[in-house]
Length: 276
Length: 301
Image (cartoon, rainbow over all chains, first blue to last red):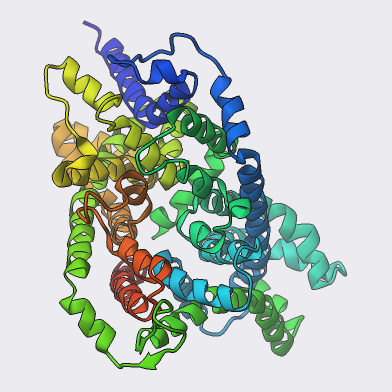
């Protein structure tokens, strides 16, 4: 037997295992969303939908304000991403390029803050936002989401800025550009990939967050997708046709983002791991 | 001779550079001050008060009484036990599964994106949704798990209605959700190991097992440590998956520390006691973070 052929076979098996493991739950919920109530509650269960239909999707949008939840999620995720990346870029530029006293302490503090348990911050944030009347206002979630992603975004950007040769920047300044001019024309374009990576991480974090969203934006009209869909389940009833269709709708944006930018996401996620 | 850095620095003067750095750091400082630092101070402060909105609007100082109450509270110990068990099961579980996935994903594929996406998707799915999807998997009547069990001749189980089974179902779900992130970190580590080392080991007659044990594992240790500590910290904060799957039930059998914090402070509006519980969770996370900063990051510099 040809050992090379054998190896190719094992490579195929390995790929199949990883792909199946990663895709199965999402695929299963997609198949579920194509089945009507009657098929969902039949024993034995069907693996492939007998009679695929998008009926559940219409119902999901009609019976619950799914469109509204989607809109809320977009507002919070986009708002917090912009804030996080904007604030993070400024800080990262200073930390990577300028003389900052106690720079290592600041970097360590950032790592420390990123480990704060959200459940602990939730209690005082709930009190504070209640007192200043910010609960059920988009800002009540945009600010915490931006802050929670800020350490990771900043650390990602620091390593990107640090990778841009200083000489490029000084050359532009020698040519008469101001520091801001050099920043704008040299550093910003060169660091665009880094900014983008940070933005994707912040977006996915915000899109997925549940604990603060359910505490700080509890009003029905303000719920984000994880909060809204989680509440579809009653005490004893579980409207699976609705839930599965809504889950698919909620998963499409993140799935698209990671599918299109997968290399960037992997790079951003693993940077900390490789460099420690 | 002037080095480029010197020229660069001199052209602005030390003072204005410091001022610029300061102003660039101010927005980040304000945001983290408002959302992280102030809340922690307030958390410490509130934890010293008897303060429950359902009893009245006033807070009265009671020193360490809330902490003492936590030590006498069986539900706190139960939540701490559940959380610790989740850490003990899911962290090694995710590391082992993640290592397996990383080794598989490190094979020479011609087309890389399906495998990469297979590792990214579990990371990107919201925890609550993973909880909901796996609740459907473990459904006693229409779930895939019971269907497969029945087909293989096993017995259908009431997964989420029995304390032990619910715990294992939750652990299984957490391991699935988190192992792919571990795999991504380990995969990045694997890819930094020079191929020549394997070739040299092969020339020396090392078996594949020896090559794994003597080359891969030692060189992967830093990445494993990072994954281990990140996973441990997030596992202590577990909330979403058990919340979506069982709401802490049956009874309080799967309630975690973060869930008990939420019930106490947000649902029962007992901010004083809830803050003390949240402080205990905070302290656990910070101790592990210190270890991380000291041994993993510090070793690097």
